[in-house]
Image (cartoon, rainbow, N blue to C red; front, side, top):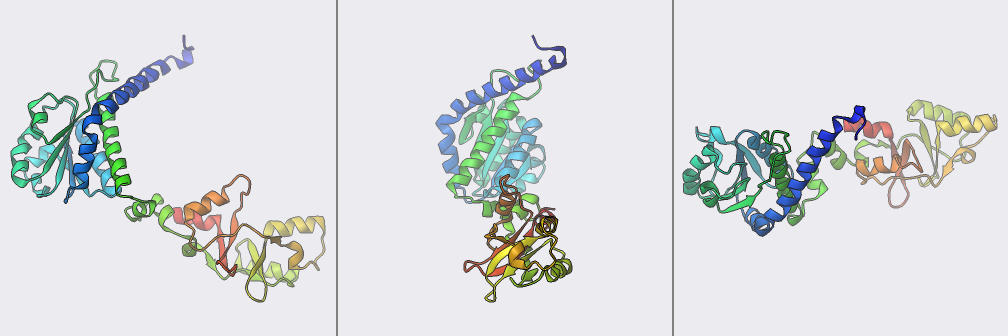
Length: 323
């Protein structure tokens, strides 16, 4: 018996359980034709047109968006509008992916004669494969369920979840088959956080060749240098521009508390062998380094393969570019 404060949680448990059971069932049902579906889509010369009506249309729209952003050219086609001119977006060599719980959607049935004349591969994700519409498709994946997660067994819940996950499984499989990589994903998301995260590199955001000091510089000189560049740190380099260490404003404060000696030199204050970045590192990789609980750094020098100092990168610079 659940406590009063969790009385409604039981319904959530029932909903989750029903949908998980539906997914397990669907996984076995699609097995016989899944590879054929993937091979058909891999050999499709054109785009994948995903279509449906009502809730199935909403799921179709999402599947199409996922395909398009993961390396499979795709568009969503509103099945109702398709019968009033939008079928013109379908071309010979395309594949059309239909979604329907009933497997009897009239709009999809009315599209078939035109699709046959155009010359496209037809694939269904249907909740009922024993229909005239299903039998007229090239491939029909069985997305049938025993019951909806809806307490009344009326509102599409388990059925839409199953259709969506089958669509995700298709997209994921196509990604692996095409060796679709994170760089490819970023290419299609240039304005979003994910795209910037994956596309931008250290060299794009670093403060080039700034905040550099000599090992013999005095504390006063270092403070002036840090104030001028206002980056919160200064890097110590030898006469060949090779990085020797880094001094942060925190290092200065801690040193003065322990030993208020204004005659201290850079070599007495610097942290030797600091965490360094490569100019070709992606910002996502830098974030993981800076947020490492064992390090938790907010600024790091950038060096090349010969340990030549190139610049500084701050956590602030990365967050700014995440938008």
